[in-house]
Image (cartoon, rainbow, N blue to C red; front, side, top):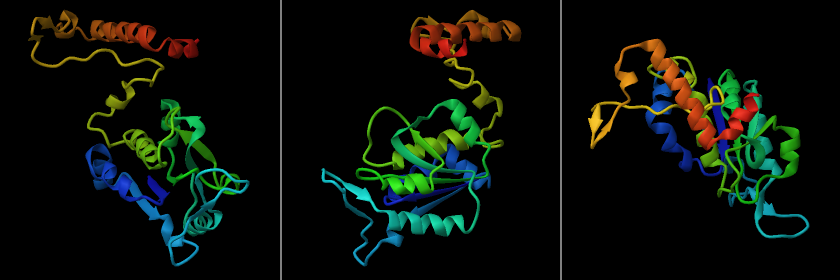
Length: 227
């Protein structure tokens, strides 16, 4: 998988992609992540990429020309399965969407900044608009980092155990059950006996029951969606 990210703050993304699972995916050749500095396509020698809002109002907006120039350059090199804009008013990122995007070959992600991007860019290029939650960040970079992590960890061969991602929260509209490791007793709290029994069918039954109960208590809306 190749992921191209267009941003005016690439430094915000360097650290998240240089560690842990995303780093491992790149080292294995399972994912390529390329950061593109939007200011390389600035409209003048001062590096300008934004301007005032037509009609008045506070804040600045990313201009059409720098984004279009960067996009046209990338689109001339390859086809993308999705051109994504990270925005608070986009579709909320959930596991099924991450699952679908993990099947793509090439993704192009645009990080908004300031008050966002000129609407004409959204109409001309963007195929998916994604939000990571009902709040506003200073820019789309942190949202892009979250999106990339959710996608890359699903790629075959990235995780040490392929079944690990399948048992994550939200894969079946259920939260994950409680998990334990050694020691079996700690400060008077003991690991449930069923997990020490070696009875795999009973353990899986217990885990499913625990997942249902935890979802009922914390996210009953997920169970309603399953109906």
